[in-house]
Length: 296
Image (cartoon, rainbow, N blue to C red; front, side, top):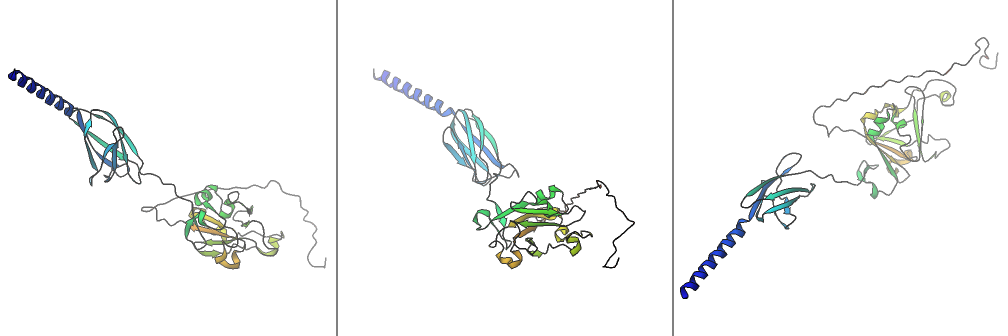
């Protein structure tokens, strides 16, 4: 009887050992590498988690990770890292095998607050300013295709009135929030990379009053719209306080392109053609004239 009980105990112990071995054999390992999707460089410190089991590991200095004793089955890995978008990968774990995985993370695009250039040329967040300011990107001015960048501001700046000449190379003038003086020029001060620019035209008194002559343009026509990175319109006396009385009608702050973001030598070519045709010629009498001075 004792011998029979001993035999049963041995058999039970063997069955338990076989059962335990069978359970241990139903697990596998997940191994892999996490790379930067742009540069293909390995990323250390990335958290890799099995979503279904809430188990995971972090990548080492070589960007590798290992999760052991994973039950057999299908799972989803979630890889996350600061500055990168989260990535999920489906894996299949087989008994006694190591499943190899390669995960590529794409850099995340962080939406920053709007940054504008103030009167001192310092970049600040638009919401932190205590005065009205509006910014126009240089690409919008270039797309307009105007010879004078002032003409390109028409319809893009609230409260601004733009008047342009209809002759080639003619002057363009801008007023912000209406005229502020009966005798002054009423144009805002133009500042290019911190240097004030007088936008008064070069026309004679007769030309300005419609007495004849040619419109030779003004200083704003000397600026190439393709060289402008951004234009900030500073409105109000507080915005233009640093420029004195010349900026009583506002400031047009221009920041030109620096070329620091371009690698190597870059060349851009733009061409344009404009043509004009008179609608009709009026009939003139050229036989008699009034002469000049009181003597006829």
